Image (cartoon, rainbow, N blue to C red):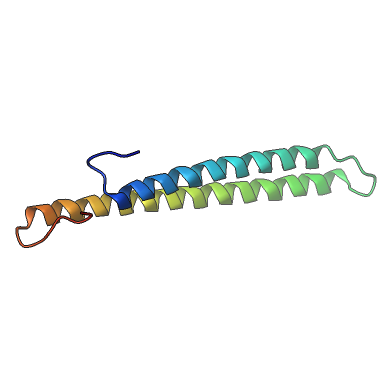
Length: 101
């Protein structure tokens, strides 16, 4: 994603953000698959309430992972925004070189 307005650092952040999003999608799919497998267990040693408990615990893990992902992505966006502000500030200051060049 090479754009004239983006610094190499900004491009790297965007690429890392996309990579994290892709990994989290894969992780979410794995959680869903595991949840279905747990729900499909029919062993005499595992009671329905135990399976339900396992499903609830897995739901909590998925929710925590989603929340962590959102926090990471929000932080990356804030860093990108701060970097752009610094670049704009530096470009208007005659005594400083442009950041990222």
